[in-house]
Image 1: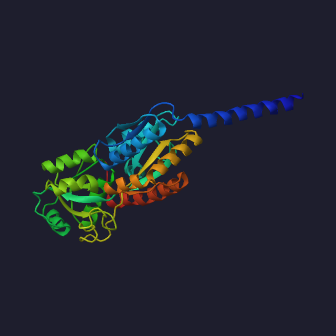
Image 2 (image 1 turned 60 degrees about the horizontal axis):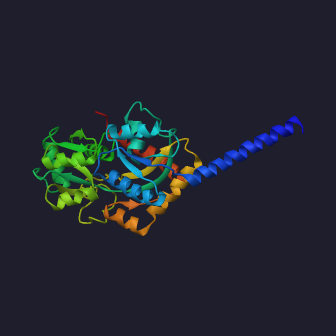
Image 3 (image 1 turned 180 degrees about the horizontal axis):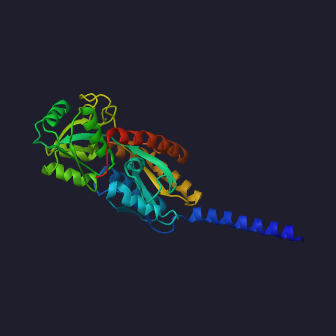
Length: 325
């Protein structure tokens, strides 16, 4: 046997072993608990979506999928944890539009939003509601803006974190409404909602599903929704644009990412399994009851979506004048 032939046979053997190992890895995955990291405190739509998916994946995989809340920094803390986790498929991130706004909002991040992550799928959209404390004497968006103009710098609005949709919604209302309200960031929307009810902040943009019970109980007042169309679960509320702020439109989205470098077989499997969950009629009905619109698409479609959203939301950050505090 010639030396060249021996080298070729050896190389083929190594390649065959590698392919066999990859298939075995896919077949055995997951062989231990998986961590699903959430960048916000428990209680908001991001948390609810992650826990919904985690429960179904646990049943499907016969392995525990642990919901791990790591709030703070506009989801930067959680995102960094995933960026620095082993690229072995055992750490997932429930991401929001913060992922595409943070690069425009912060001068430097402890990770690269594109290079360090592997997009899995777009999970859902969910509209926000413009909520105010009952003590604020406004029954409409127009009345709120008139009040804010009369009291510049006095009305505060809470959000689930710097650079998140709630923050940008408030800054957009400042810009398009010609008012000056003061931003107060929290480590998650649930905490901001608590302070809104207590009157520590006067305004908050909250997820429709988590907001409606408080609205119905009279603890907060809802004036409008942030999306281009009225919310199916609360059609009685106008959009902010309808209510007197032309051009106002904000559609928060939620998706799943993993660490870049994770074996492609595992990425493909996680995509298939999560998409199958999102396309299940019972799951879709549950997400709709939470006020969301389920999606579930391919990795390639999600990559293209994120690229487009990075441009769109980056412009929104710049135009709104939003800045970290």
